[in-house]
Structures are given as structure tokens and as C-alpha cells.
Image (cartoon, rainbow, N blue to C red; front, side, top):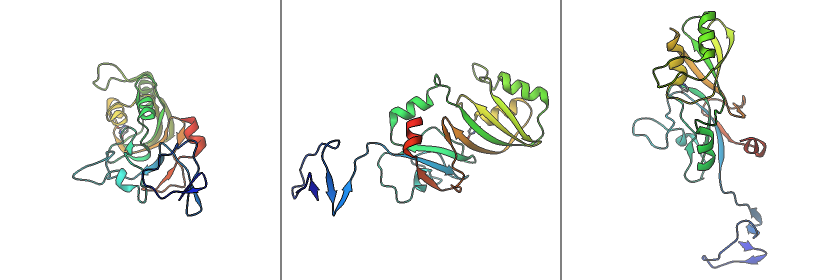
Length: 203
Ligand code: URA
């Protein structure tokens, strides 16, 4: 191991991670403070770091050695799709802040077709039993039983409760985008990849 070209044998060698050049067996070692992963969450795992009863999203990151990773927000156990996993607490805080209104898009499988009036209600905001109505959402009808719902908040079970409020039921739920990130179509459920430099910049 060399630091700025000098072979180092002392374990207590102090380095400046931004300035010093570290090489280990001829391979440069670069420093990064935070790690960012996109996971295509499968159903059946929980959005937590530890759980006594089910696999967690963190346990799916095989081969990853970064410390202190956690999911940014939660998807229900039966929800699939885009989940950001990081150890950057400040970014997570920013993305989850209710004041920031980060867009989230969900592909929703419905129990029954949505009437025009129900679409209008979802787009205006519905009473889901909280202190205030949901913020206006966007509904794109893909077929009789499939919509894309775009919301700007992240309340508990929000999509399921919104559809319940218009006498419907969510039969399947997949998150397809989160802020500027879009679910990578090459990731099968359970697969993950690091965010690109471009995606990190967008966040
Ligand atoms: N809304 C829900 O109801 N569940 C999720 O997992 C995400 C959004």
C-alpha cells in the first residue's frame, strides 16, 4: 500500500482523503463518503434495516460493504419497485421532507375501473382520514384496471388509502419513479445497482 508513492507499513498513518493518493497492490483506492443504490424492491421484504420476521431491503444488497445503509422512506411489504438506499442522512431528510413535495409515481392495479368523478376527486385531493386532504394528484389511465398515480407526498399507505377513499382497492402497487429517479427497466425485482454520477447530481 502506498500513500503518495511511499510504501506505508504503519497502521496509524493519517491521510487526507481528498488530497492523498492511495494505491493498494497497484490499484488506486478512491474515497467516497456516501453510497447510493437503486433497488427494484420485490414483494415480501420490508423497508427497514432490521426485522425479526422478514427479510429486509438491506439484506438484498449482496456483496455491498458500505456501512449504515438505510432505505429512503418506506414501501409497504407487498409494494414493489424503486427504492433508494443510501447512508446519506441529509439527502434522505431532504427527499422525505413534507415541504419539498418530491414527486412519486406509482403503477397501480385496480379492483374496478375508475369513474371520471373518482379521477377528478383524486386529482383534487381526497379525505383519507388525516388532518388535511391529500394534495392534488395526477391520474393517467393506462387501461380499465391500471393507472399511473403521481403524488407529491409520502403519507402512510397513501396510495391504498386514496383509492379506498374513492371506493376502489389497490390490487398491485409498483413505484416507478421517485423525484428525478426512474426505475431502471433492466433491474429485475430483487436486483439493485449503484446510482450513476448523473443521477446523484439530479438528486
Ligand atoms: N402508498 C401505499 O399505499 N403503499 C406504498 O407502499 C407506497 C405508497
